[in-house]
Length: 109
Image (cartoon, rainbow, N blue to C red; front, side, top):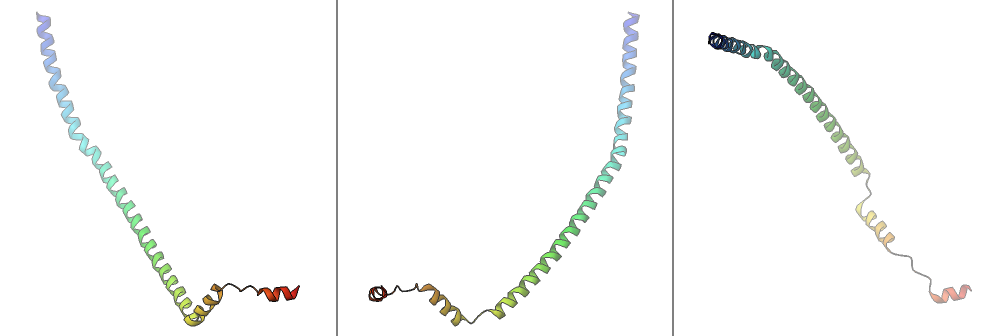
């Protein structure tokens, strides 16, 4: 009987001790994870700044390319032939060559 009573007392003493250890661990956890959270936030901010710099560079490249394209379009519009001459060239190219009449072919023989 003494043995059972001493086991119950020992068991009751161990439960609060382990509970205190759990509470101590729980209170330490935010302190140890806080630097990792701060570090993660810093890393995310750094990555965001890097991506913003890339976007700015791409926007600059796009605007330069648009200006170059506009300059090329301006050059092409100045050098284009008059519309009537272009239509005549198309009309001439559209007409297939007429075969020689049969009489002329026979005369050649």
